[in-house]
Image 1 (tube, rainbow, N blue to C red):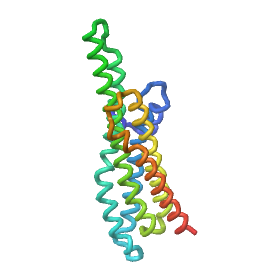
Image 2 (cartoon, helix red, strand yellow):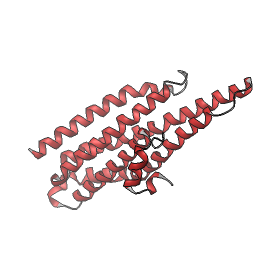
Image 3 (cartoon, rainbow, N blue to C red):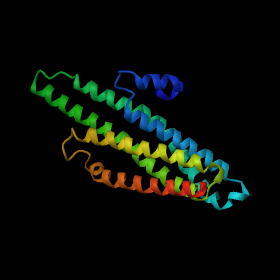
Length: 208
């Protein structure tokens, strides 16, 4: 069964089990999906409300971004688990001969690279979502500003959690593999913290 087809309770039970999947990468993608859902809710509560007309453009932009992320996050949750399962499967390949050893090594590396690329997409989509949440926090429906805050916290957790998964997988690969991701990780982490901080200030400011 796919993770997104489970009840919330069943998914939490699977997450708490001793099985390696679902793990942190899947949880990060699920958090991103929940953040997208909350962001959509705030956008919908802003659009069409004359009191919040200054936030309509921001809400429309948020909706267009959420449309992509909402479903993709669920797919990434599954892909993350599948990628890790493929890594483990590669480690079980035979290594009795030089050829088998070489094939096994290449399979492990390719599977591990995929296991890095999946959470990196979670990071990329998370940054898109975080950027639109900043505008919603500033000009969206003020009655739902706390929901923007929760959505931003979930998004930040998804980004930083996914970055952990990217890093730990890249550590076991040669430097030339995943080079672009390696270069972007510090910038992504820094931007996530900066934008998150702005959103928190905006939320607290409008609740004061």
